[in-house]
Image (cartoon, rainbow, N blue to C red; front, side, top):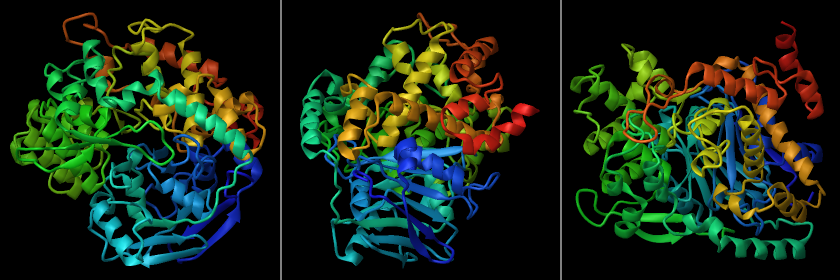
Length: 618
């Protein structure tokens, strides 16, 4: 096959055995690559009801069909998929940079890790040579320290490394997997799964060509897309970057702050994208095969955190800034640096800290419990609690479990202060004022997440009445979900989604130039729907029901208090029920949210009927 390497690498960490098997063309056509391929392999290789930290839970690393090519932003991505230690359902997270390119050029579409090593190891892939190497001397090191040590040992500074930090080693449930210094597969706890296997790192050197079906066509279409990337569709990412969202979201009361106690931040100007770029951004760089350049590298020039260097996007800035009531950008940048050091999800970690601050403000946790006066706005408390989470030290041992489990363990009303969906911490969109987005969040197979549907764009752009849910919105959410599934299976950067003016038609053109498989845009769209259903089936197999398509407690119980047009907004249970009924109907699922046998046959998922047949007959 063109584009695809045509091979899946298996690694048994318990025995040390490695082997490859062919990637079947039918599997590639039906699931594309990236998260689609990863989810399908998860269904095949992960036993039901397995503990996420069990050796039986596979960690699956995938590339996309465009990886290793010149395809704009699609040539550089990779994804990790496993059963999530946060949600106990589908866990998946993607990252860009250069690692995915190297893995594809080494000749692999996917790597499936099973078992658990007796002692810390890292995997060294050098084209055909695959070895498990001793990593005892790397255990305890930060991702950057481990990466630099591996490159020095192997004698090649151009090797690409994906690795975990101290948090993943300690099974912190929000642990991430880092690559290329600042790049992060951050959400759903994939770093904790990697740590549970005593797998410190994956180092790759690839020297093979990635052959494409139509070189001339790909080159010309790439030039075409590059020109679009110079235009308005990517302006935000090329200029202020996603931190531009701070003032935009604050103005229209859709930025949850102080752990969802407000829908705006009264000191937003102090943490704005404008101020960040003026005082802290030192350069803007890009990933391999990218024409946009969006990575805003920040340097703290003075003060207690002088010399701190990291990239910063809206979501981490929001989580450690407005959501914690912190109005100091230097402290937020330092917080991001700590998240990179420990390798923890900066979104989830910021939300966990805000949860702890809310518990402190409400007298549920004390200074003795936390080791510091963790009031909203205390930037020192932010940083101290990040340290504790990364080390599982003191209260950090409980907070490292994520807000859902931490709320349950702390009790005394803390559960209501833990804002999550399916166990995954919320992101920076106030769902009380974005009711189309609220549906996308509720049904997201990986939990609280704007990146599984992008439905917030409909609300923010004013294409719908964002304060009111009406039947018919579910069709819009469904279409965006299917599109996002393809984006994440091709592993195109979502920042570039606006340059695909014709949606699936443009994407299938790119896909066919690379693979030569001749899919139609309707077939690609159907693949997006198939991936959504496959993810749903995994969650159903693991015991998920309609009740798991929920919203955070405050979204449904605490009306927006801010003066302005959003005041009093929240989502009632009857509204959520309307949303779910509308969505399940559009998806062709039962009232309980179970894909019907007819729908699964339509999507070519007959081999997975066993998951739903007992439940539909009940």
